[in-house]
Image: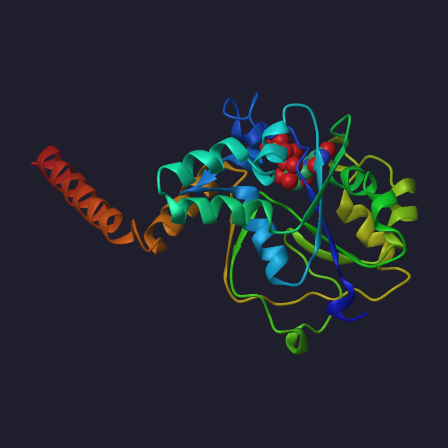
Length: 249
Ligand code: UTP
């Protein structure tokens, strides 16, 4: 299997986001903004950069904002055009032109493995990627010649269609959910499994602390905000240090 064969990516986004409550009670975790882009857009851009053409998002109740985000917003476009905000307009248009989007409902959050299984009919008999939108990978996409395998771990997987019959038989595991990891363990008994070592940082942005760390790192790297934000942090650290010294004195 070559990387060029992988054209479709499943982005499971139907989880309940309990680690981020109450923010995720009625809003999708995947739409939490990392500086100025929702988490899921980072995963979509990463998929597109690695050659994916079709994005299948697994959604559930309360996740409509994801569909709206990747759809065109004619009214907004007209407004930006009329107000001469050309740069914003091209950014907004870029989002809906990123890939072919398709949405599948997972009617009950039965686990990541189950979410992947929900897209079986759209995958057919070809390898596909699974990318978790709440895991942010800050690294460059490896060149095809450097990618030694068709399987990777930490929120990014390339899987063969043989995983589907295994997922169908996988019983609920950890947290009572149908786990992708359990199905992968089963798959590994009949076919080799490879991991690609990626040099970069990974943030679990579905967790409050992980999200805050990712926000700070991405804000510091942001070309238009980075230096002002760094200055704010420096001043903040200095005044915190001063306060500590005063309280000790
Ligand atoms: P997580 O465990 O990180 O997400 O699942 P969660 O269940 O939404 O969050 P917590 O643990 O309750 O805070 C990894 C990914 O799998 C998706 C999630 O949306 C997330 O992107 N997922 C999980 C589904 O699509 N369906 C599920 O039934 C479970």
